[in-house]
Image (cartoon, rainbow, N blue to C red; front, side, top):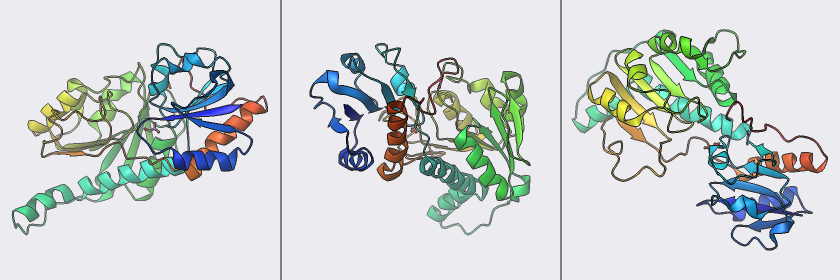
Length: 310
Ligand code: GLV
């Protein structure tokens, strides 16, 4: 019985240690030192080499190192009968909420403008509005979107979520649902936050026409996945001053290619997909519990749902 860790571009030593502590009976292997492929029953993955999973005939569960699983389910040779488990770790959810909060406050108070003014030696208080007049629109009201909505609502912002399906939201938070409500949602959003999973239904969802619905001077924060907001349309809307600024942590192609104009746009803040940090000491506990569930014959959770696409 072995767990294979395949974590692209990361130091796996802390993960091996954390999994060993949680699963003392488990043989832990790190890709590419797989050993006998028939012994691999569990695979914990982040951007694994495509096609590799078909080498393990006794695989019982595939565990994502992230909440998003498109990096797994896009593998054309994914073994169809093996459950794919998303990672929902409270520590990451909290990090993602704090990441978005940082940029909301940054834009709401105009700190990006004050940074510019400082470079010009300009002492000039700018017009400001209260949180009660700032409308935040969160696309994607899963665990991350809901946590963020509560946080921002608690700070006095006007918060509305948008999602593909109906969902319950906490009191005081608005919710609009479905493509027919997207336009109205965007029209009343001063700061748009992308917390959607990347699925066939969300890929390319926000293009030129959708960005044009946002009020003049709106801001965009994207922290879940690239490929949902069209990057070229976003740059154009910024250059035309329809939008004020954008903070992007995720991109259609990662790492963001050197030639991308997003790097040098004065209105774009680029971070390298660091919104949610994966801590071995919390994430390995959640993932190990899912492995124990499979061992007990129970379903791991949350499972990737092919119909929903996430
Ligand atoms: C990270 O990007 C995740 O999917 O949790």
